[in-house]
Image (cartoon, rainbow, N blue to C red; front, side, top):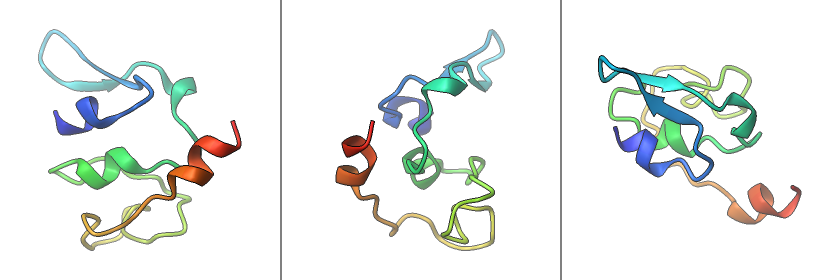
Length: 75
């Protein structure tokens, strides 16, 4: 459930069976793969992201950094 708590934009929710769901897709910020970095199961991917591990390729995403200035600056 780390990805739910980590998302700054309220994208995720939990259903009656404790499954994580995308509830507010339009709230997801383009270029913000933060939830994929903290997901312990690596279950969240962004297929078109320039970083292979975030796009779904095998690899460790824990050490990746996000430029928050770029994320919050343009919206």
